[in-house]
Image (cartoon, rainbow, N blue to C red; front, side, top):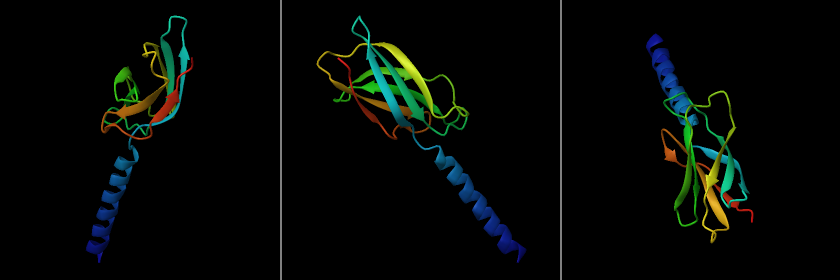
Length: 125
């Protein structure tokens, strides 16, 4: 009988570890704001959510992307934010072609790359 319990406990532990691993998931962009400077470039403030699990799996970047998929800017995140969720980081000096009225903000992590919830952001004039 102990062997049955032992096997069941082992299977449960395996499942729990998979749930824990999968819970980190992909990066979700919760909020983004853009401000235009006098020089014409933009400053972006982006709020991300990701269940960082230290250096092996953490939100490591976000991007400003044109509707056609062209990457306009990348903000690299230098470290995990395990105890700071959600978190907001900014990037200034982003040049956006004058023909664009909106951009896409997407987040990436060290395990999955880009994925999760992206945000469509209308640019201020």
